[in-house]
Amino acid sequence: MRLFFCSYKDSLKLADYKVQEISGAAAIAVAAAAGASTSSTLGHARRLTQGISNRSSSDSRWAFPFLLVHVKNLHAYTMFARTEDDKNKWVAAIREALQSVHPPQRAQSSHDVAMHTFERPVSCDYCHKLLKGLFFQGYRFGIHTYIRKQVVGSA
Image 1 (tube, rainbow, N blue to C red):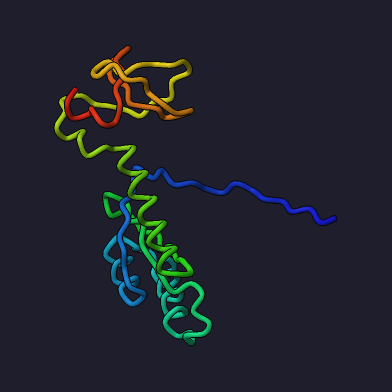
Image 2 (image 1 turned 135 degrees about the horizontal axis):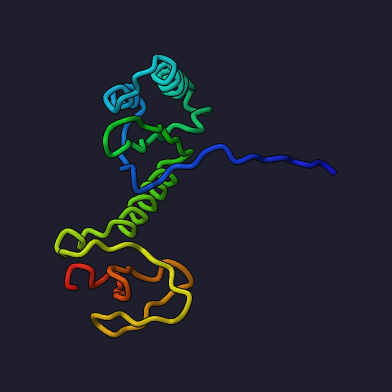
């Protein structure tokens, strides 16, 4: 039996990033504009994108890139998918996650809301509907005020 050892190295706080769809040739320019100040990072992005563009069409397994760019343009991560459908799924999932963390309706509200996991069943203080789910069921602002995502802008 073979044993595999894995180690945790680093994680990204998704709320600090935005997703950008790009083509393979544009990855170098966007990485440079996003603040890839070290030559090793830029060189790595250049090698990755050149490797993708130089491959034959039968061996282009990771030919669909997109970027995770820091909101303050400090740096960017180039992510690759095998198919365009996979890339679109990843981009859509990341955008949906970002909208859950920072709902667009938040701009219409004067409250600073934060996603919250409730240990017991809780109702929305605005519409009195049950907050459903096992974790991150809704948003909390203040000490004891709980709301659903759909009413963030109204509350």
